[in-house]
Image 1 (tube, rainbow, N blue to C red):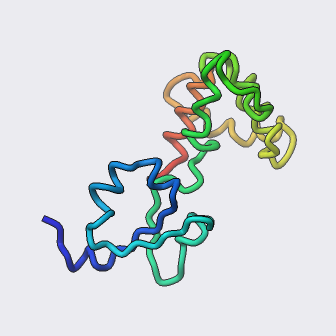
Image 2 (cartoon, rainbow, N blue to C red; image 1 turned 90 degrees about the vertical axis):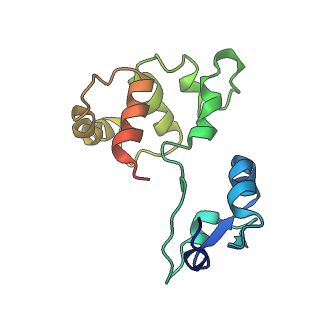
Length: 150
């Protein structure tokens, strides 16, 4: 069972979007569980949840690579909204990543320097992949796998 002594030390910070993202988790493990909750609706959850004297554990703070849920609509082909930040992904996950990811990062202002410099910077990471990194799927998978820690 659950160790109530340890559970009393837990504090769950959330906002309305957190509940919508995983309502089953909220209902089964948080709501009515006796765990202290802090509603951060209207605040930056990631910023407000990181506090001195606490160990912060997040699900996917910032959700690397734009956010998986936020990016999902980019791969719906003709159904995808014509948001200029995602227009490069219209051809899908099979397209070469240089044609999709790099221009998208550039358009979003996420490259600190020229595309060539970013490509030089990321190349050693890509070289470590045990499989060829060719498509958009390949690079998103490898960067998520090799550069995330959860």
